[in-house]
Amino acid sequence: MSVRIEGRAEELLKAKNFCHVSTLRKDGSVHCAPVWVDVQDGLAVLNTAEGRVWPRNLERDPRTTLTVQNMENPYEYVEIRGQVAERTHDGADEHIDALAKKYMGVDEYPLRQPGEQRVVIKVAADHAKVIGS
Image (tube, rainbow, N blue to C red; front, top):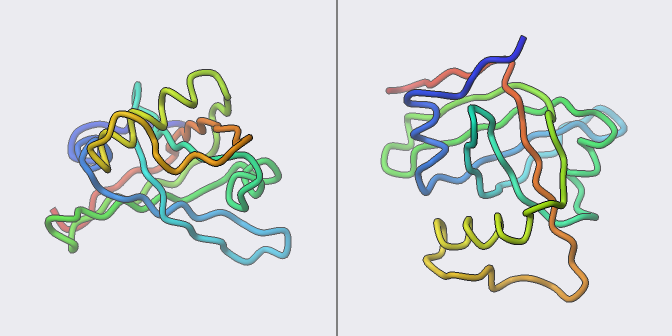
């Protein structure tokens, strides 16, 4: 059963805080990577490039845990456990530009690589809890 990300959890995702996305490798071990995060319509929204490890892991097993720590108070964070609700290339370039504005203060994402295909991954939360607030 999905829960909506709202209140303080939503505030932490909207702020300039980094997200650690944890996925499962084929052998069952955990892979964790820091990423930029956004929230739309109660879902956590991530953006990445095709071919990276963590989105490949999510193709095989859509379960994930996201941890977003408050950069202003590192003792406060939100833990989100859920699974991929949507994966799309539609609007992915515009979305990474919006995230670059949020995190870097620039209008266009400056780290694009030639031939890179961006993908938006939306995560529906089964559990979302703010700790330390």
